[in-house]
Length: 235
Image (cartoon, rainbow, N blue to C red; front, side, top):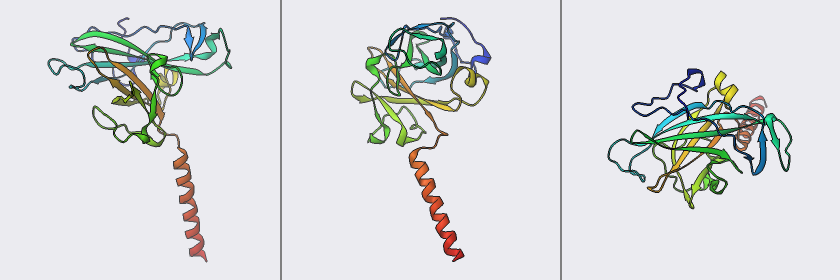
């Protein structure tokens, strides 16, 4: 880890560390990508600070003293700079990974490295990528307001067979830092599972500006109704 409070590597504001020792994580380039062994030919990209969240009390944490605080960072990997050592994939494109710095009682507790293994969920390991469609959940746990997303297209991460707690969301605005180091326009949704043995975090992403199939068909139906009304008036 390194102290690196650089303003142009923040989506919005600089992180507020308070009396915590600042931790700007250093990216580990892993030798595996989507289950394929790889070799990287690039310098580690700089993690960009996205947001910080104070976790709710009463979810596996003591309610005494300071509440836990997490800081979310993200970075983009250039896939033209990767060598696939088995099952080569077509070159080009990029992928995103995230690091979540977890503090408790002002002390650094853990850095969670979240990446896609298979499917839409960013998780710490391949064994923790389970999710369900959000529309299929009768009751979805949340530490505050519910996610503001396209529910029909959204997935909800689960852990140990149970839906995780929604912690918060942050939109990546269209600006230089997100265009160069992340994916501008997407919204990140953070979920947590809290226990005394250790906490688990996962996240998903969604382009809220993209039109879903339901929205497309609804727009077409509305257009057809307007057209029929116009013909009726004209006739």
